[in-house]
Amino acid sequence: MTTENTKVSYDTLIPNNVGLVSDRRVLKGLEQWHPEFLNWWHNMGPDGFQNVPVYLRTAVSVDRDGWAQFGYVKMPDYRWGILLAPRIEDRTIGFGRYLGEPVWQDVPGEHRATLRRLIVIQGDTEPASVEQQRHLGETAPSLYDLRNLFQVNVEEARHLWAMVYLLHKYFGRDGREEAQELLRRRSGDSNSPRLLGAFNEATPDWLSFFMFTFFTDRDGKMQLESLAQSGFDPLARTTRFMLTEEAHHMFVGQSGISRIVERTCSAMLENGLHDPYDIERIRTLGVIDLPTIQRKLNFHFSVSLDLFGSEIDDHQLITATYPVLKLEQGRIKSVATAAMPALNARLRDDYERECARGVDRWNTIIRKAGIPFTLSLPHIAFSRTVGEFAGIHADPQGHILADDEWDQLKHRFLPTTDDEAYLNSLMTQVLAPGEFAPWIAPPGRPIDNKSTDFRYVRLTS
Image 1 (cartoon, one colour):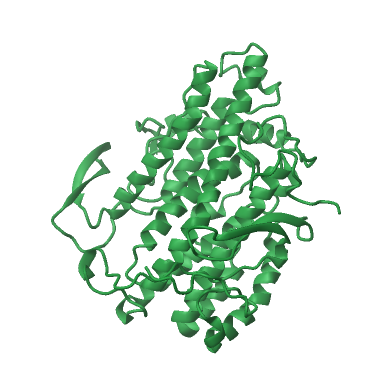
Image 2 (cartoon, rainbow, N blue to C red):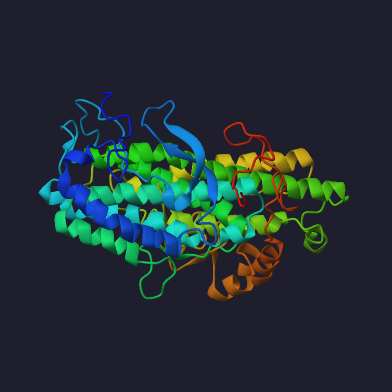
């Protein structure tokens, strides 16, 4: 691997390690896009906190070690930049029709439309999540969590910049127009929604936010890992560095739900409650009952599975096979399918296994507390709107249900209006240094080795 372009240059308005200063056409286009981005950020970014200093990390290098520095910055002043991982000399394409050929430094004409679409879809998810989360600061359970929310937000916006750079650099006028559209669409807007369904869902509470960062950002990680293998080298290098930042987003989700589960279990034990289904009494303690956590888990896992698309793609067939679950004559069966078109199913299975490991960690907390309850991932056929199982009803165990059965039972599987109302009642802002809302435990480890009562967000001078 080369060591060129590992440091971030600040010699233009836009920090970068791609030599923007000598690429006047692209630099001019991005400088024109910059004020429109800031206008979007002010209108659709974190509401009510634009002018307060936040203790954020900012990328200063793409080296594996020492790539970021921490410091206070007001979010509109955050140095969003263009960062590509170092080029690997003599890198070749690792699979498929072009196996062993040199990677592409420019866009092949026959793949132009497909690559542009991939970049646009990836780019569209980044501002969408910021829009979904813009009001969460109003109900932050602590300064620690508020800061983590903002760190996720600014890095999602930087990932938007990463995709916009590729559109400007490699796709000419079409790319510039697509970059404009990324700022025009809005999450949940009926007239101009975001491109993928999960990114039009509301994020009304912090349990939803932690589920989103655990499940949906993990899906994003899997997609980025796939793009990091792209034969189009600038895309691969861009996503390789994005993965470095994405790890924190998943940590926020994993640790956030762990802290909720921990607080629920400890509150139950402190009050002599051992039945996890005694929801009325548990809720009087001001914590989130485990069945509600399970229903939220069911929803977010299924919505995130839809992001993988159909189980079977239109890739070229090869001789290897891979087992894929399919619906045949009203029953779910495992069917041996050509491996190349089943790439989505294989990637989704890897995702499911990784999610299961996270759920196991939450169950360890419950098991140590001696509470008879086990969180679990629902079957991949449960509550799907995309792919092989769209249009059918299945319970979390994968049993096919008739429409009337589903209508009678769905309240057991998915969040109810009562669940949402209760969660909303818990969402009160706690912003005193070192204090936490009563439904979530303090973190196990701080950010940047700071003390528990560190002022991660300076709300007053």
